[in-house]
Image (cartoon, rainbow, N blue to C red; front, side):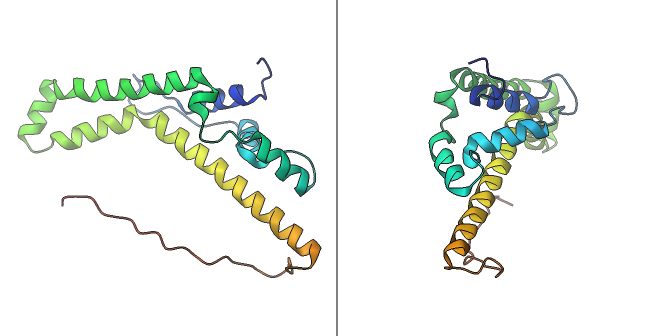
Length: 176
């Protein structure tokens, strides 16, 4: 579809904005423009009409979040190529004299980690941008629910309602 605000075009522009030059010593991806971020939030399920019921109904119909690989095949292929490029780059780095010198000094793993981080910068930035858009959608939906509940008298919107906090545990998988 040729619509610049269409789903495939927005997601593709957002991904392109996250990409960095593979040759650059410092990753150059900057992330999406404010307009593309607004459109991304819309397409991730946060947009529609001017009232909350219209917005929520539209969001339910429009959200394609999580199925980008299938709904935008060219993006799925591009992201797969990027993953293969990162893997190949790290494997190639293992074959270099620099790696062998660092390996003998006990620093080979650190060299590969830095190389992988640089090469996978675009994917990391894209994931963060998508996560930020998802966060904004959830915030908007929460606000809409509180507004609707306040309109029916279930909740006083002026109260600072806080849902119970869930505990998430990070597992330390390091071998240090």
